Amino acid sequence: MFGQTTLGASSVSSSASRVFRYEVVGLKQNQETDKNKFNIRRSGSVFITVPYSRMNEEMQRINRLGGKIVKIESLAVE
Image (cartoon, rainbow, N blue to C red):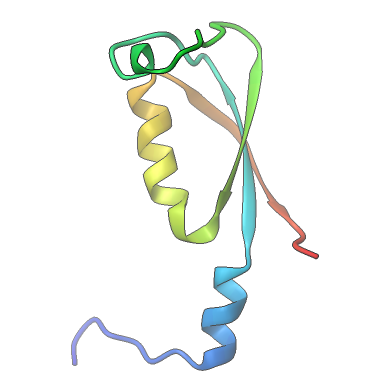
């Protein structure tokens, strides 16, 4: 079928175990973060660790919160 790929079992398990860390600056308090029981600092870097499968969702959330991703690095999972 168009747009579909076949992945072997090893490909699925390796991508499921990959973890990335975002370095984010500029997060600020807004309506979404007001739901939290704590304030978000407006300055300084924040490090957010996410699995590969949630990278896109987390990038969108950071954008909604007014943050800017300055670095993405892969972390080794042991």
